[in-house]
Length: 107
Image (cartoon, rainbow, N blue to C red; front, side, top):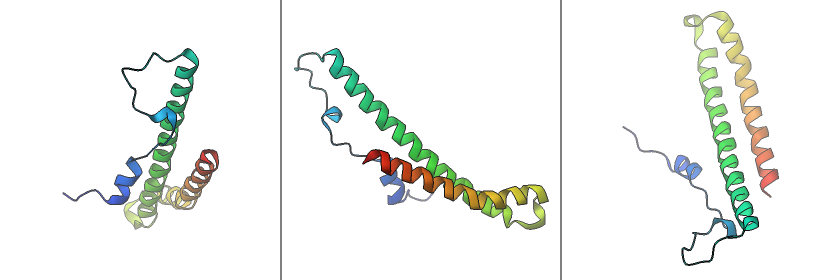
């Protein structure tokens, strides 16, 4: 079994440096409703970003699989090869668009 690559490990780890990402101090007074809403919204944004990045990775993996099918020859049905060859062009472009959207929204 192969070891996971460092690139894969980096994709799974995200350091968030903001007041909302701090460890909750049990000795601290309870949060106000507004503070709690702000913290939960920050958590929701972080989770949404992780899911969008996972979609980007899945699209790139699907593009690689589509390339294999498109180049697979007669073992694959003609229609499947044709659709796969179109996906080879489309999916990486869609993943790149998602990457730019995420980058633009996080800055």
